[in-house]
Length: 262
Image 1 (tube, rainbow, N blue to C red):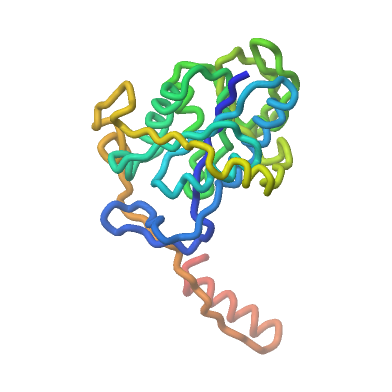
Image 2 (image 1 turned 90 degrees about the vertical axis):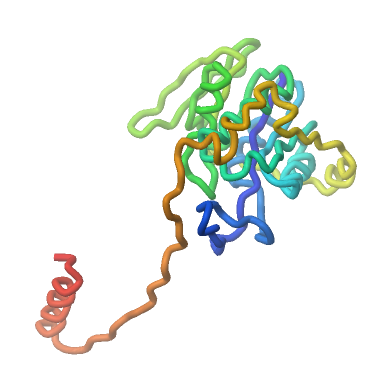
């Protein structure tokens, strides 16, 4: 079975500056890590490989330093890795990102199952996986919390829906996004890290895609534009009051009215 896992390098801290012009995160010089949900997706792929055989490829979109998460995936057991990197992809919203990744998937060859984490910690939209599937014209299910059966031509999965638990079977090729409680991710292996230190990481750019229309990628291909984005302000102001129950009750009531909470 050919399995492809989408992974992403995200900031390792919430203290990230925002570009006031483009409204996107400034990632240069910021500590980074693999998106936590993608660890569960990768573990799911490795479990399937151990049970059914095949290969596990990973693909990520980002600047050159994003190869770091591919190397981490190698140390966990991934077989191949591809980095989609081009300045023309910068500033992409979820739709442009999904299209770019879908083009990268087409470039990577035949795939039976694509696995994505439920969402990323720097975007939290949970839209990229399903949008990729739509661009690729393949069936998909989200919020998968359990794999019930992996058949020769299909997969049976249990989905954690808002009010119900649903079981569905989808035919390959297909895409699933997984919840964080599907499997416990393994730790990277030092031996695998050493053994894969020089393993090739394929790098593809816009010129390598079948669709080379620049208007479909990056800021040009993003129908949504960020009007304003800013870090939350820290409010550590506080007041200490003393008095009887009646006095404190009166002060609280007056304060709530002053702040227009009531």
